[in-house]
Each structure stands twice: as structure tokens, then as C-alpha cells.
Image 1: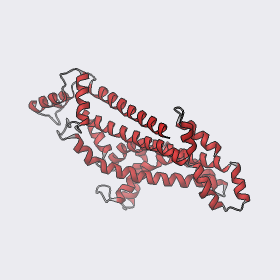
Image 2: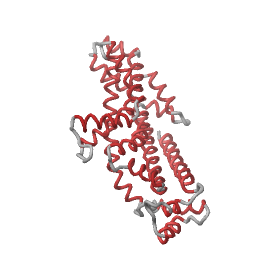
Image 3: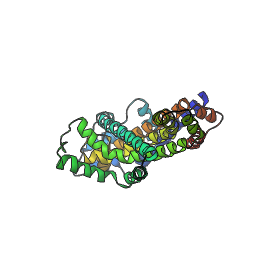
Image 4: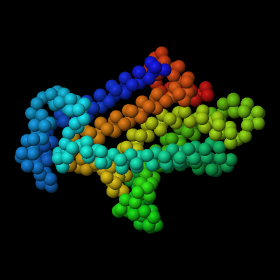
Length: 328
């Protein structure tokens, strides 16, 4: 267990380092001067003095490797630079935008997990074949409709037609739930699909007949045994969907006029504000890696067999989960 944990922590650190290095060189070493772009932008010009200050700060006249070293040094000091568009500290802009995105992603995740769980239970254990088939057809439908389409439909129905939520003002939880619903649908789809497969495999195991012969009720069998054994592979999908939530927030926050990470990213891309883009990409990468690391470390606690298999050598998580699901 200790070896497995240390190996996964080391791999996560390597991924974060490689992500930061790749983002830095892609955004800062490509041909062109981002400061000059801002100077020549008629919508948001900056003075020559401010431009020179930014050039000196980012050491644009130095070789790329020197710029990278200075960037890493400042990163460890908590300095991630200044916006080329507004001149504000990037850390302050992120701190302002992050709570809104976390609230949106959190509500969307709860909705997606609940919806995926209900769909999977209906698809596997519903007593009517028509209900089971209808439930199995929902995940592909959720995946096939773009987020911006469901977002516009939700805005039209709940705001303009029914008037339940304002399309302009932030009404707290109601506004967050309305924005989270379109984001939750494509995330619920893979959760439901993997959970359907896991529950189907668990329901076909020999121990199910043994438990039925002992007089165990269907409710205790499903929620006490099958859900526990069949939901282990779903933990992987739950971790992967974090990236989907963060990526989908760009479109969702733009449609619903929410000032979060997605809106900040869209604005930075539109204005070619490379320090903000770099900071957002690194923040999302670290978040994604940390959550997947936490899930990896949680697996041996959920099923000790995973820890025993992963101990001697590096093991692909999907292969281990498949083996665990089959032998459950």
C-alpha cells in the first residue's frame, strides 16, 4: 500500500511538472510579442511605460530557458504574474472567479451523480422491459446533445417561458442549479453507462443466487451488496468527469453570464491574455491530477485487492478495476 501510494504521488508530480512546462513553452515561446499585441489593440491600448514594465517583468528579451527559470522561481513564491489586459494580479483574478466555478461544478457533480445512479438502477433492476430499455437509451442521448444547446433550452424554458429564474440577475442557488443542469447531463451519461455495466456484472455473479436462497430481500440485495460491488469502477469515471465539468464551465458560464473560471478563460483567449490562460490551464491541470491521485489512493480502501495487485509493479487502473469487477 505504501509503495503504491508513493508511486502514484511521484507520477502525479511528474504530470504536473510536464503540464506546466508544456503550457509555458506553448504560450510564451511561440513567435510573436504578446505585449506588442496589447499595444496595437485599439480597444485596450497600454502606455509605452507600462509595456516596457511588462517586458522587463516577463524578461521577454532573455532566452526562453531563462524566462522559464524565472517563471518557476516566481511560481514557488506564489507569484503567477499580471494580466496583460487589466494589469491586475492573476492570482487575485483567479481567487475572484474560482468560488463561482467551484459552486457550479459542485452542484453539477451532485446532479450528475444522482441522475446517473437513478438511470443505472432503472436500467438494471426495473421490473418492466420498456423502462429498462428507455433508461439505457438516455446516456447516449445526453452525450449527443451539446452543452450550449441544453443550456439555451434551459434558459428559454426556466427563465423566459416559466419565469422561475432570472436570466440576468444572480439569484443564488436557483441560478446555480439552472446553470448546473445542462453541465450535469453529459457528465451523468458516462457515470450511468459504467454503473449499468458494473451492476449488470455484479447481478450475474453466483453469490447473488446464494443470497436469494438465504431469503435476502431484493432491497437488501441491491443496496447492501450489488451497488457496493458494482459501483467500484464508477469511481474512476467520477474522477475523470472533473475535467468535463471544468471544460464545460467555459460554455455554461458564458451562456448564463456567470463570472467564473470559464468566463475568465473565454475573456483571456479573446484578449490574448497569456498569463491568465497559463494560470487557468495550470490550475485545472493540478486540480485534475490531485483529484485523480486522491481516487487512486482511495481504491485500496474500497477494495483491498487493488492494493495487493498494484503493490509489486505499476498497474493500469482500468485493468485492475475490470479484474476486480469480474471476480467480485
